[in-house]
Image (cartoon, rainbow, N blue to C red; front, side, top):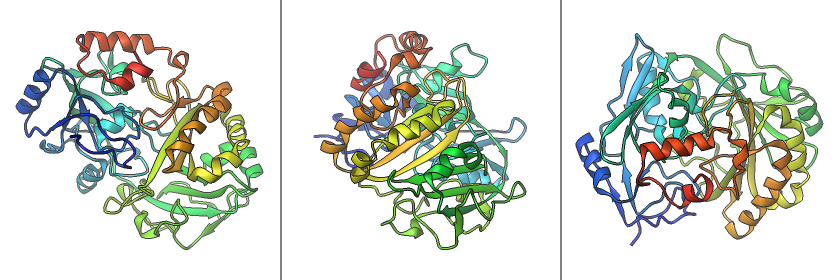
Length: 410
């Protein structure tokens, strides 16, 4: 008997038990007693990264969302989803700097895998962390903050160090955003004006299927009171009717477009919390390339368009600012994320991933840890050996290791 599948139904968990503690004491007891265990978040990862002999879910733990206006931070249980945290912050006049495309994902799982939103000046979601409290293998607690030498290794940690009990995130005053969709951008205009396109709003997403001269759609998310969206975006024009990133999906699933202002929590994600995000019946992959290689990397992937397009729902291109987190895809480089939402055809999609990775190899592409990929180039993570050492010190018995970590990290 298994505990079910991940969000898309692609991976069936091998674990035989899911613990659902309702207090810190219960969580500590569960972790201390288990020989092998991993934290189970919102099940949105597409691989076996969260799998183990036993799993522990924090869904039943008190959210315990506590805002500290003096330090401009919020602390919360690791099991809280962004879609549940956002309204609490908004009602108190606060905001997070950035969000991923869907609010359904847990804060702890997103941070552990280096998940990101978009924006030239916005880092990954992990950059918002100001402290993190782990339940260690023996059930004890350890809080790590920027004053600790290991902090940059303990944030994007892939679940290898312990179970995240609480996280503290940096805040800023709430802000309103408008969302405008453009169509008619050509590939030549995009490649000639990459910096101009991605710097044109607070958060920018480009959706494409790689074929033809037309790129697809561009979503600009502009902060009210800052730079207004343009009448023309390098030849692309705004559209008034709402659009879904996937052509055959209902637009009511998406957050409001058409330039209507709204709070950050209702505009920065692409999808509404109460609806199914994306397609659901899908696979996902993503590769983060240093910004200096962005144009060449896009040309390399486009050369595979005939092989990619038949298996693809859509690709999304997003940018992010550099960080100092050891296993982050944006470690010490501004980056472009090339995200693939695939049709759920693993027998065809999985063999294509090494082909894409070979095409992106000259451009130092790092895979998103929570998506599907073929391999990891260890040399692209200069602090990987330091992370392995950190994991050995925090989890000397290997309680939190699993097959995914053994393949790609250890």
